[in-house]
Amino acid sequence: MTGARLPPLFEAVLAVGTDLDLRTTLQHIVDRAAELTGARQAALCTVDPARDGLTEILPGTSPGRTPAPPCAPPGAGPHSPGTLRVPIHVQDELFGDLHLAGKPHDAPFTAEDEQLLHVLAAQAGLAIGNARLYEAARQRERWIEGAAAVTTALLTGESAADALMTVAERARILADAAAGVILQRTEEGGMEIVTASTYEDPGDIVGTTIQPGSPVLVQLLGGEPVFIDDSATDPRMTTHVRHRFGPSMMLPLEADGRLIGTLALPRRRGDRPYTAVERLLAGQFASQAALALVLADAQAGRARLAVYEDRDRIARDLHDLVVQRLFATGMMLESTQRRGSGEDEVQDILTQAVDELRSTVQEVRTAIFALQQPPAAPPTGVRGRVLREAAGAAAVLGFRPSTRFSGAVDSRVTDRLADRLLTELRRALAAASRRPGVSRIEIDVDARTRLPDGREGVRLTVRDDGRAGDGTAEDGGTGTTVTWEAPL
Image 1: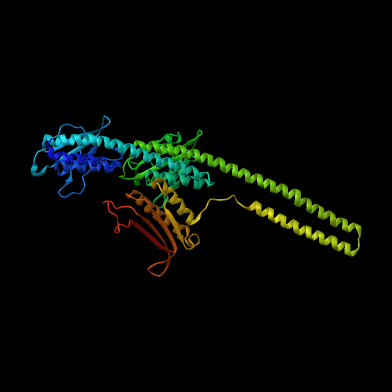
Image 2: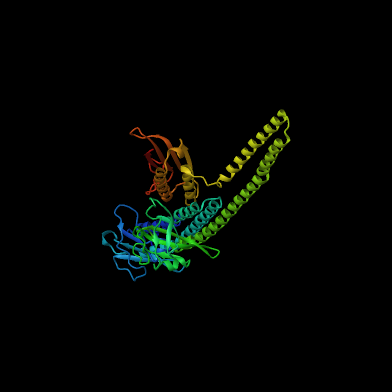
């Protein structure tokens, strides 16, 4: 190896290990390999795409550089004089191949080129191993935080329907899925989608049933996880909505021997498959969520019991205080009639009786009002739903977006309009979570907006400080701003 090529090699080795993000690390490897050898075509082809969710990495957009030909199976044999293929091992395991082609002037690759790439590949193996560990730790941390957030939310007294939606929404965000769906057993022996959290309107998803006899039903009712590569083509899937989804996992919500239902997390068609780590973490999340649902149900049962006990107390008070007072007042009036007392004395007794009756009526009304009050319900309205979506996004982002409301949001924004606003908010938060460098997100909901046509409206604004896909900030370095508005 010539001394002139050592400095670029050292720089390439250092560059490969400067980032802990796996995709970025692989991109560094491909770019540096092309630069060291002068190859016009380069690619990194992985052995097991399902493990890391990556199939191939192509070079950056440097002038004169093009992607390599389609990947050959890694380790598929020696390279030819027009091409060069070098394997990358991670802890004695074949990760994939660096595939290079197209030297300037159709020159062949040299032994020195191959030697340089072997050095780079050895360093790449170490960097990939470190990036894998870092990514696994980050994923585990996000899922653990998400499970803790779900447990906290469920134990604050949500209704059963809200509790299931909380589980579906948090799981969808954590898994980067197109939908979070919960199925429960039907009386006919099948399963029905009872809750769905999606970026679009979930109306055509909720109510979808898996009929008895479906191949996947035996596994679901038996509490077994089901992993699917492509929902649209898998013969086990029989629902009418399967065509819009690709990779999916269906996880049992089971705790203390009780099957609450199934949590399904489908991705869009063409999206990357779930990795083994994602499947493991999602399964652990489902187990924790099922336990939280059981605890929340038990807590709700205790709350109902407390309500019943309080109503029993009110009933005893009605009997001990009100009924006895009415009885005593009646006796007093009867006694007055029998005594034949003077007119002034009778007037005093009757006045006292009337006062007692008025007081008794007031106590009866108070007791009836207390009996009519429902148990405290979780916050609702646009504000509550926006705050819940922001809290859900915090599990992925690592920080909670700030929120601001202007105007009478809850009273002016209808439920139908709120659904559209929440859909746009989910899309904006999902896009922001995928942008690099995001450390701050601001959500603004303004119900005092005047639209361009003069009508009153509501405006949603989501701002972040992330960078664009090419590594530069959008809008002159001010991050990204997404705006949506509609008439009231």
